[in-house]
Amino acid sequence: MIQIRYFTKSKKGNTKKLADFISNKLQIEALDVTNKLDESADILILVNALYANNIDKEVKLFLEVNKDNIKKLVNVCSSASGKSTYKRVKKECDRLGINILEDNYSTKASWIFINKGRPNEKDFNRLDEFIDIIIKKGDINE
Ligand SMILES: Cc1cc2nc3c(=O)[nH]c(=O)nc-3n(C[C@H](O)[C@H](O)[C@H](O)COP(=O)(O)O)c2cc1C
View (cartoon, rainbow, N blue to C red):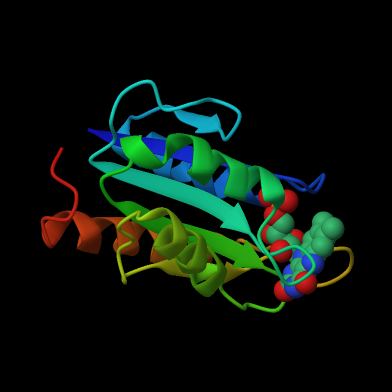
């Protein structure tokens, strides 16, 4: 079973936009990280962003609380610089014994006056292809 969780902090709600896109594509509800995993997720798609060059403590807390219910984690993220959160998330996963897939998605996104309109159509198309690739590889079996 695939589950989707996200953490959005800014008023733009970029992370929620990415999570909702995946939700529509896979027809699976996307919930914020305050929602615990009640059942084990074969794949957890964790949608998050970079803040002050790190992931938010809410995201770390979510991983800590739900570690036993995550069989494999797929990281999807955005940032103003384009820098991925993958390394930060992997560090937490390694610490907690969570299996994280090397394939991951990252996009530039708007922040204050930077990257206006991002994620844009191209970014969503790339996300669409990323999810397709993950499914094709058999990493996500619906
Ligand atoms: C408080 C705050 C700190 C941020 N710090 C960084 C940063 O250090 N590096 C970066 O590339 N982007 C940074 N950003 C930009 C966010 O990563 C980007 O806007 C992201 O899409 C926010 O997602 P959200 O709208 O779901 O919160 C920051 C944004 C906020 C609100």
